[in-house]
Image (cartoon, protein in one colour):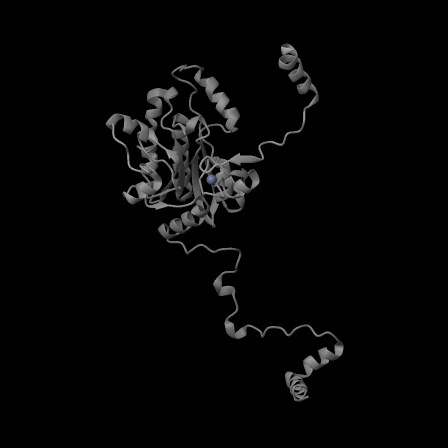
Length: 336
Ligand SMILES: [Zn+2]
């Protein structure tokens, strides 16, 4: 009987019971374990509606939420030579790269785009932790340089969202060379007098925190993001001491002067636009599509609120004949 239950039955089941199973409608929060409906979660920018835990968000989804109307134009990034070291661990590096490209449906671990946030023109770059742990390789270096060059060409500020497990070991020394390269890119922005804002997201670690992620004019972090060079486990094992609560988390770093702000994802857009407009001497952000203040009629010219629509023609005639007649009638009614 064993072969029937183990082999035949599953085969038959797989042949006849191809039910249309809806694709992951629910996501479990890693923090509090609440099951979250995927559409609701997406509307909340992948932040848990129960405990405010900030989950992973892809650069493309982030850009769609950040840019006005979800409209942005991608900035093209030159591709570096693939696998110059002919690196191989359990897999060949090009195979690993192809698998990551297929899984993330992105070319590499950083996306660069230009567009407007609250009508403030900006260039944005976002690192993708979902793509080989957001590791910084030659492509990421190229992307940051492309972003900086585009920002200088358009005279726009640059916003960078960092998320990385560190340098890409498959590219060896070439990945470490991206640290000085990206530092030069940031310097280009400073020489052009353009603001460079870094938003550190969970987790930003390793060589990334030792270069472009810590060179911003303003450093903002998402709540509870891990931001460090060496991780807490490594430090604990090295110094053989228990680390304080919340060590290397955004709030702890804010208290210790490493960050300027800790801002929830939902409020980032407004905050970034406000900061950029302050730094570049523009007027405050205008919410909605209200006309500019000078086109609104001055108060004296504003007409009296319209009287409620008369029900009959007679009433209409009364209405036009004047308010006094109606007042008299009202008084008569009171007297009765
Ligand atoms: Zn939660």
